[in-house]
View 1 (cartoon, one colour):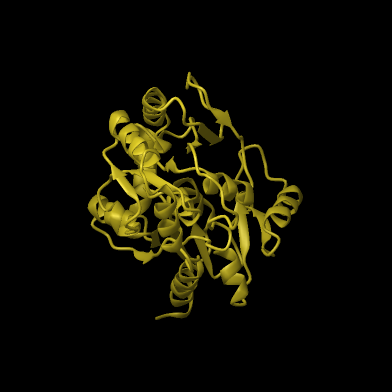
View 2 (view 1 turned 90 degrees about the vertical axis):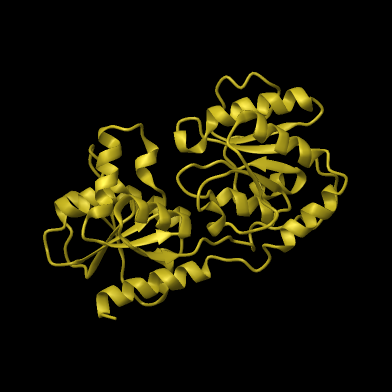
Length: 313
């Protein structure tokens, strides 16, 4: 999104908070390495938000920082990517996150599902921008080969990723299909107690290759649709996704397997996919359904909202 704003000629700055202090030189080097197209200046937010026409929070914590350090007249905006109160049990952190949605910021919601959750919680509307998928990076492998096994994106420390539910499902799946290899990437699994291949953190090319040689994958998320689901589809891997209210509005692809979030239901969905007779045909149709998808519509929508807010409708 920052690249899109800079491509339109806007000068951007990235404000960072760290309670131990911000090394702006080191962070600038890191950003240049991983996002070489981004030319934004890196600033310590505790020095104050100044010299900008608009400031955009990107998480509930940063929304509070905008309130604390944004003392000059400025357009305040909020790019909301998850329903973040659900990151926590019901308590202080939940309420600290929830209250930010009532701040007098212009809200940009990523996807219709999140917009619906915000409306239900606050009665307030948001500008909705669409999800995207980089189909130039994630695509069906050019070479042939037999697909086998399933894949799982593992983040045990993030409750919204449903790790414990996934672990139950994968144990049951292994009991049903001990011949099918289980591939895990991301963070190391805890107490999975079944044979699996752990790949650690992968580059996008490595991840696409893994999707391209497996049949199905678990794509669980409980605060918004995960980007993983459509990226799997682009490579011909069929995602098994937990059913949630409004989720299909964001991901209307007919090849997604929507499943009740129970261990048994998830395992049975994976089982049905690995035993299908037409695995290659299903994979091809799934990959074809994502061809041409990109983040450009999202870029355009975010830029339009920012310019409208700063310049006027």
